[in-house]
Image (tube, rainbow, N blue to C red; front, side):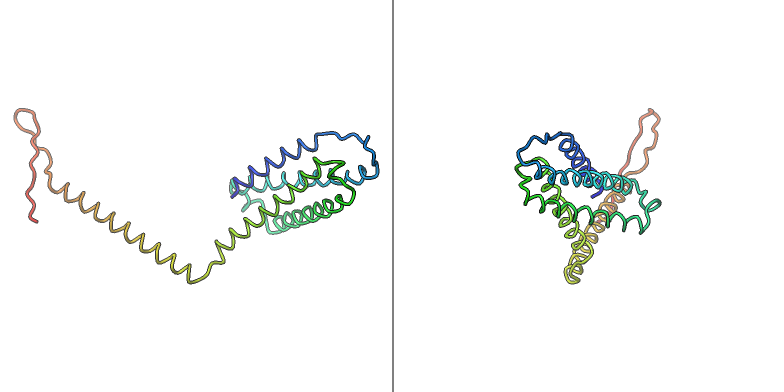
Length: 193
């Protein structure tokens, strides 16, 4: 999960840099709409900062440093920052529709839409993952534990049979005894079965 978070944050940062690196000329016919659409650029920078923070936290979690460096207050601050940026990006996106920013600045408009969709898909994935992990139906959980115990017992029985077979093979062979000619002679024991 942390590797996915790191890779997706890097991809979103790279996309943001490409989109934000483009300079838009203000020679459009509707100067008021262009000035209003500039707010999308500010929100894209805030989303860039959010991706950098997510990358840093994912990297710390991958290395196991979150237990030493991060405390509850830092995680709560990150969650609040995520929520504020997401709400801000949504309000800016919906306000920009009234100024026809999809025509004036289509790159920013559709990138902002993609960012919002990314966060909602990621949030749905995380919620489903944690609910499946920690909020499972007790009857299904008991069935899964019973199946796991059965598989473990079968594996242990197979391992025990393999060990018994190896032990029987080792008991059938004596240690080599040197002969006067220099060759080793191996005698097999006869086992009663």
